[in-house]
Amino acid sequence: MGCWQWINRYELLPFQMNKKTLVNKIVARLIAELEGYAKAARLAHAEATDEQSKAEHKYDTRGLEASYLAHGQVRQVIEMEAAIAALKNMEIRNFDEDEPVDVGALVELEHEGERSFFFIANKAGGMEVTQEKKEILVITPQSPLGEQIQGKKQGTLVQLSPGGILKQYRVAKVT
Image (tube, rainbow, N blue to C red):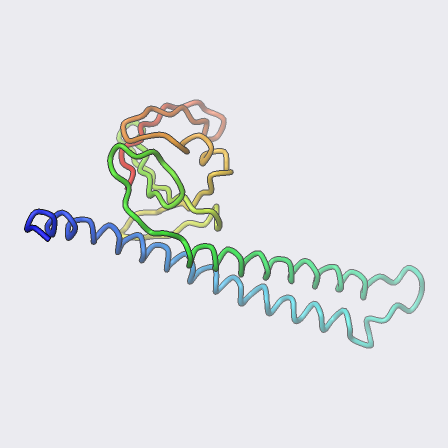
């Protein structure tokens, strides 16, 4: 490997490590949420199967309601486990300046000097993570914002309507 190739490769590593750290933070938050959902599911299941939850008359639905709640909590656990697996298996790479926004991209949008940061992931949309003193919002390609910026390149102008007010943003950086 030539000297310049090594330098260029070395310069890309900090961005890769930052994204890896970001993904690890997202996974850690999901694991914490998963533990909460799993505990809630166990409690709801115990409530649903408890002898005192047995219906005393035809309008007594405590046991049935607890069973629906347990089922919903179990579904959340399954979805959370899928999100964790998807993020752990996600390819973490850097995007070149001329590459369009896609899953795995860290996108910086600029509007009138204000900058916003977004990480495009297949799962965990809506989660906010702080990294290097920046708030980064995780979005999915299926979200309204994700659909708007998907496929855009650095320097492209995008019209978005946060809070119902149409504003023009510039894709300042895609990494």
